[in-house]
Amino acid sequence: MKPAIPRPPPSTTTFILLPMALLAFLYFFLFPLAKELKLQSLQTTCRRSTFANLTELPIAPKPDFRLFMGILTHPDHYERRHLLRLVYSLQPNLTTAHVDIRFVFCNLTKEDQRVLVALEIMRYDDILILNCTENMDNGKTYAYFSTLPKLFNTTGDADRPPYDYVMKADDDIYFRLGRLAQSLKKMPRHDLYYGCAVPCDRVNPYRHYMSGMGYVLSWDLVQWISTSEISRNHTVGPEDFTTWTWLRDGNRAKDKFDTKPAMYNYPSGDPCAHDLVPDTIAVHQLKNNLKWARTLKYFKVTDGLKPSKLYHIS
Ligand SMILES: *[C@@H]1O[C@H](CO)[C@@H](O)[C@H](O)[C@H]1NC(C)=O
Ligand SMILES: *[C@@H]1O[C@H](CO)[C@@H](O)[C@H](O)[C@H]1NC(C)=O
Ligand SMILES: *[C@@H]1O[C@H](CO)[C@@H](O)[C@H](O)[C@H]1NC(C)=O
Ligand SMILES: *[C@@H]1O[C@H](CO)[C@@H](O)[C@H](O)[C@H]1NC(C)=O
Ligand SMILES: *[C@@H]1O[C@H](CO)[C@@H](O)[C@H](O)[C@H]1NC(C)=O
Ligand SMILES: *[C@@H]1O[C@H](CO)[C@@H](O)[C@H](O)[C@H]1NC(C)=O
Image 1 (cartoon, protein in one colour):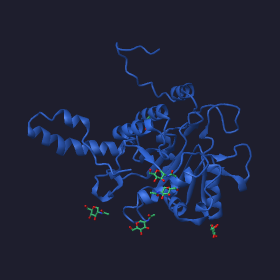
Image 2: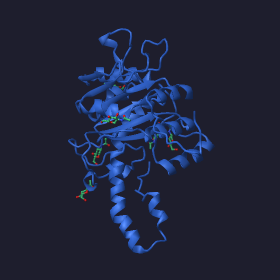
Image 3: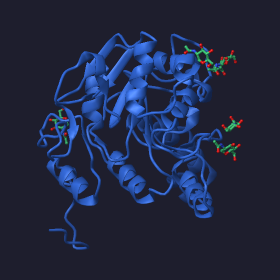
Image 4: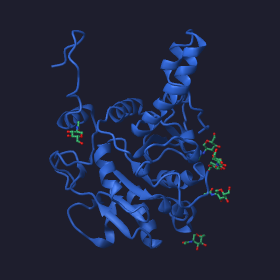
């Protein structure tokens, strides 16, 4: 990832031919305003420079917490990334939490990926490519957690880490970011392991780990994972279970928070599945467009569609 330089919003460029005074007005008054709005808007496109030097930025109000949400996906899943970008950019009811959403994958391997993924980065700058070979349970999650502290090692200030929390999410889960932010706001900022505890049908505290659908670790745990021999020695295996064994063997994560029943699988026979309910943080196993559509409809995501003579939807 190269450090991105904040660019003026496209609206600025459309005024390029107007008198200099107008241009100056736009730059000095509207651009800072746009930046502030963007910080609060949970957008997916916040630039890396946003956390390069926190003291330089007009962060107002100070976010309750900062979350790095990595969606582990495959380079070829272009359509899914398109859907996720749409869904997360349209979420209503923003809070003061700061959420950076990034798509995470391993080394590109194909000629088309090197061009099409580069295009996406040029347009969205929301992709993180790790130094690993694409895999699910073969160390990708370790590569993810262990890379982040190195990438964001900027301030060296333990009291003010670049993020409070790091999430590992699948690409078939829908998070309601407002509800997630509301829930995380109340959580401890240290030693936290948060998610949907599995197995869902029995409570065995010795084998009770957070489902890989989407779990959150506090930054101190991510730092620990990146340096501990316990995790480095054991990177292969079902990724969610493996993460838990690191924490168990390292005697970490005293604070565990199980979000059930607010995180669950899309209705099916699965013990972790149940009907869609209003108090939902996340719905998982959205494996096809119909399941996405039914979920988004349930949460009334498209209710705000304006009528127009240009289209008819129903
Ligand atoms: C961040 O910016 C402040 C104010 O411009 C400056 O004093 C400080 O040295 C910078 N810190 C880093 C780590 O660049
Ligand atoms: C937004 O929040 C307000 C109150 O905070 C609530 O009444 C409203 O229903 C929410 N809207 C949506 C779309 O969630
Ligand atoms: C990337 O991984 C390969 C194979 O594990 C290793 O040889 C190489 O040094 C790594 N590169 C970087 C920049 O870490
Ligand atoms: C990933 O790609 C980088 C750059 O091409 C290369 O140095 C590295 O060895 C690759 N890593 C793996 C694990 O294939
Ligand atoms: C962060 O940077 C400091 C000094 O620049 C270095 O000593 C430390 O090892 C780095 N930490 C990580 C996790 O890379
Ligand atoms: C990790 O593996 C190395 C080499 O096999 C071994 O010496 C070390 O004790 C292991 N550490 C842990 C914490 O298991």
